[in-house]
Image 1 (tube, rainbow, N blue to C red):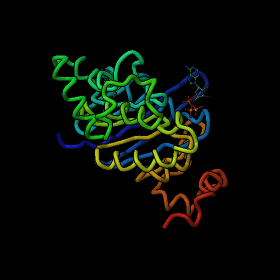
Image 2 (image 1 turned 45 degrees about the vertical axis):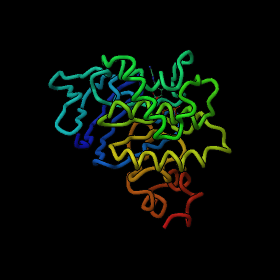
Image 3 (image 1 turned 135 degrees about the vertical axis):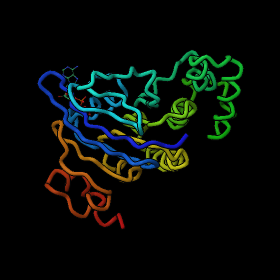
Length: 247
Ligand SMILES: Nc1ncnc2c1ncn2[C@@H]1O[C@H](COP(=O)(O)OP(=O)(O)OP(=O)(O)O)[C@@H](O)[C@H]1O
């Protein structure tokens, strides 16, 4: 399948809050949405995933229209071809790693045995073959993240959405897992959106960063641009620790 690009205008109201965000994520690239608590990151991600119906705007992935409010189009989450990795991974605790990865394929109607075989092959690919039979409770944070990523990628998603990918990890393993996640996402080569409050995630993983505050875009650009030329004190403070660290 050719990797499609994502084109979206997300307008969503949550109580008094209003998100108004335009996104264009080219094929084979990673966009990170960064912002403080309450800026609308989760609302944006859930809208892209189809879990929130936008109040206006559209979401297109390649030629496919997933949402178009004016035209009355809303494709439900399960039929959007969107892979989501939630911040606490949401692995089924009573299923093994392989069964977790196989779950989506089995739900799509693939015979259980075949789904499990393909899941095991995926786990081998991400160096977790030895843990295929282990339940999530016995995995480290980094391993659980890999299983969650495999569970999403095995379905060959047109767009991959990651919600705070480092949030469940302790500070000491974060940097290592971040680097590993970066190489796995590059290997996936798809169209990816990451939502994070941590500028270090965005700088390490993204081709483009969108800084969100109070539901609107403050600045967007490639990481080096945001570090070198922040539009205001808030963006400057976000990336202050990285000044001088990016070529
Ligand atoms: N179901 C809801 N009803 C009313 N208001 C909501 C609802 N969900 C979110 N909000 C409000 O929308 C705003 C944006 O919330 P959102 O969770 O998208 O922000 P966020 O950037 O993801 O924050 P955090 O980093 O804390 O998760 C907040 O002011 C929040 O209180």
